[in-house]
Length: 437
Image (cartoon, rainbow, N blue to C red; front, side, top):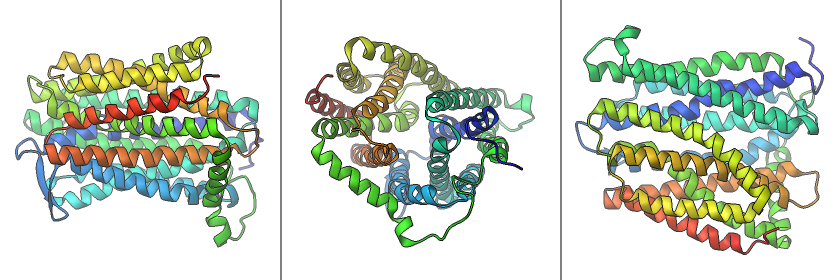
């Protein structure tokens, strides 16, 4: 079909709709159903498994696999960014990673302890597919929207993603709670596990199905003719990161801020990635059914409160300034990590989920906008945000590895969460060195 003109409402909506398609991965696979399913697999044999020649705790194992996946993403994101900026047909790259991620989600249907390596491979590829497709998805924004449209359509994508992912998660929750209504047979435990497996397939189908609307209207890329892919083009992303690093050495406020962001993001992302595993192992649920329902409800609470937290944090930053607000949020996170050591009851976990959602939404939204305000006068904002994204991914790798190591050595994630609190304290000291204006 004929390409729609830049700024076209239909084109903008089609681009934003990909958030509706892919956000089900982050909620169902990364945060809610898969962690519960994964923990349930180990319920009858303890939390340890022999894998890769080692006796590993299940939560430590998934932390290490997640960290390894983010190493892959951190290394290849600059390569993909360089290709995305140059190659005409970047829609094919976006489709490739989308389909790899979606089909891997479907593959999780067969995840079990007897075939643990295949299951972990599907989990690994699902994460790669999701983040890989985002590189090309995000790179489309300046191609399809004018600068004055970009904030609004980006926010619309976030909203669509939130609504779509919550809808599917509620359907999945209904399937898990009342599997027989959906024709799923077996004992209560068996039927619930089947429902979770079906939910992984539904994520893949949802992701592929709804992304077709996006692909139908998106152009092939910013250039209409394919051009030769050279070594220089492939490694252009790394060259851009090197340029940004050189600039940071001269821009002390931005360099100090990035240090604080790196440390706090390391802890925030790790806490959010392991929260469900922590809740499944450490909270004294009355039954397996209560555990499943309670954990999913906590994820929904976090999603809802995060939106409110982002709005209130934005207002606080207008009144008190970005840096003071970030310092307060990091202080709340530090206290949160200390209190997490003592929680044991479901009500404790609900309260902590509410607090986590509030400060999660606030710190993520404010961190990115603060970084944007501190950037020097430049038209090459893409390189600076690529550096920002890579720093975030490397932080996740370090955070997940530290969490996994402490969990493996001590046998409990409680000390690991407390240890993450030290990163928030460090971030506070680093942020205090940034000028408050």
